[in-house]
Length: 340
Image 1 (cartoon, helix red, strand yellow):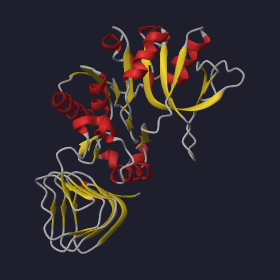
Image 2 (image 1 turned 60 degrees about the vertical axis):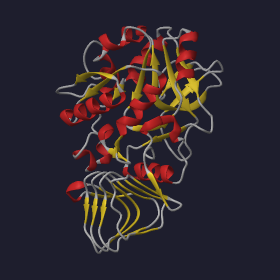
Image 3 (image 1 turned 90 degrees about the vertical axis):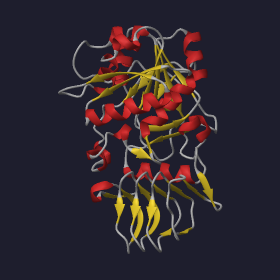
Image 4 (image 1 turned 30 degrees about the vertical axis):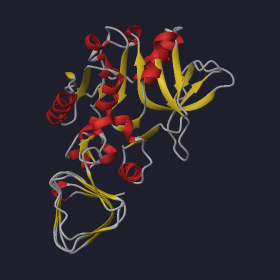
């Protein structure tokens, strides 16, 4: 399951156009990367939940599932959003047939999940949380582990213990069906603070699977600044995109010079390109356009004559007025412009 019901408040006004997992990232809905990760694991059936802009979210998910040959189950949350626990509960019938993998739809996580699932099933625990060292300078709620890598406290909640260490939760869980026994039957619930804490206090076991390998990349794209930082990481080669297979944004692209990539349908004209830069399907550049460093132009983007872009991410369908400098911004259709 990929969790797709969030409101994306920190990314407004961009999320007035798309639900966060449907937002374009290098010409692909962010959801494609999550689906590709699950496909690499061997998953053939995937579910999502919807709430914010549900028709958009479902249409994107249907298209991406078809692209990857996955069957799709959708749970719509009408009225009150149900939280991460409630979202999982909404697909109980789908998920409770055996081991299930849950992924947050608003992160870019380049990882191989097969060893995580194998370790979960071998340990016979109720749930596994995939963890990383706490990112420097961030203040995410900590998951606290004991010496046996058993979760003892989450966001300050739970029985605790001695010599606990703090870790960062990636948004990926592996669940056994017993987890559903600890979910309230109705109402909004959080899988971590409500369900797992209750399970642990009742004697159940949540295991922490710690990843420290240098080839693992994780980023939360939940704010414009983090979106921008992740965008730059991709362009400067900091993300092991091989994890996504054909879903990599560089798959099928043509190399231009040392540090630019373009879809075969992109029309670059006489643009001066420094790069690194990325040009999606049907991009059209006017005369005398200058492209600086860390620039991506999504599918169907049009750039007017004499525009100069530097450190910009331009999302699918945007039309950029010519004769101006655009720097350190996220640009989207309907004139949406957000500093990064």
